[in-house]
Image 1 (cartoon, one colour):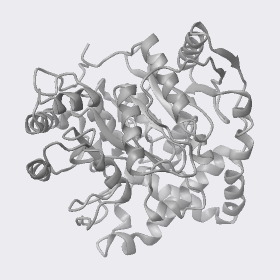
Image 2 (cartoon, helix red, strand yellow; image 1 turned 120 degrees about the horizontal axis):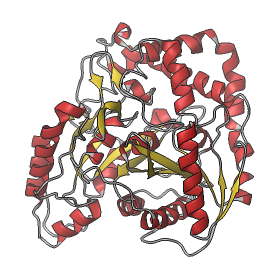
Image 3 (cartoon, helix red, strand yellow; image 1 turned 90 degrees about the vertical axis):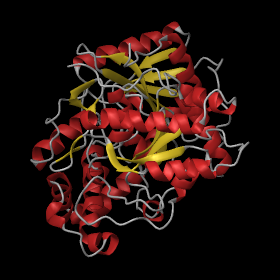
Image 4 (cartoon, helix red, strand yellow; image 1 turned 180 degrees about the horizontal axis):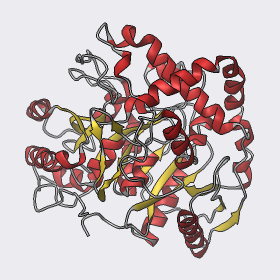
Length: 469
């Protein structure tokens, strides 16, 4: 199956977001030609990839006409997309479902203000799995979001549309968020850089801040480390997380040699033999670069972690079900929700008596994992336990089947959502089928700068494959 991408001889070329910003500042390119090229690219590939949830092309054009000459915003005029579970004024937020009649948001969410405050111009909303509950977007009516490396395979989720569009060259950077791996999983599937930052690094909607365990973090997916580093530098100028050390301006590898632990097994599951081998090859590369690498058997977490996380996920699904009409209006129809959402809600309903202790154990997860980062500067694992699965493997029709398959595939990413630690997925490997395989590095809360320095070093040492090659 041929790859699907939009790279070509237009204003975007093969530039990343930093390169595009530089070309715009020097007036080698104009904002209008860049935005029109991105719109054309989106229209060229969306029918194959199905990553678009909402078009706002005319709004983007209007915004360009209002731009102030000489703006100091770093990404001024660079096109992007916002994931469709974040409010953007004047646009609907359907959250990966069609269970109610859409209505336009009245104002930007806090994170949309930060993302767009960097100068990025949004062309619309990208598709996700329903409420972000699945690691693959395969809605029964909205259809699957496909992987541009091979459209017979999933683009990952929940930030699936963002991942597919950045990989395919539609835009160089797109908003994503992560409540169980949803930045890192599509980054791994699509050959991208995906940093889930520390808890509190970027703002969250009020209902997410009030969760008993705050698991969601906002960020971006990009094709280069420097784009991710530049985004967090610029976002930090607009939103300062005072309880965390600043990330600052990270532009190159760090000089310090690090102590790095390597794991190929999660709390519950081993990675596939292929992914295990690729992870060990990445560990060997780190050793070649002078880092001290030690192999561990399993992460320090309770044996109940996987079950507790699924039960907590079920609580979130139950909340969507019970408050749907209040949140989304009278047109909300729970019968139109997919069977993963409904199955998770049933699971929570049947196990409500277990939830209090599960939440206590999840809150204690950071105390268990924190000592690891007093011994090691970073931890290497695969991002997901196997290569991206084919479309249909994670179809949500059969709840018991899909939750078992998801639990095995996305077994590495949820831990950092619960502990609040940062983690970055890097496209350092490929499967025998030619699909990207992500390698994940995590560190202690507040240590994003260290992860970015290490990411720069690995990108230099082993430049990753490009879809257009």
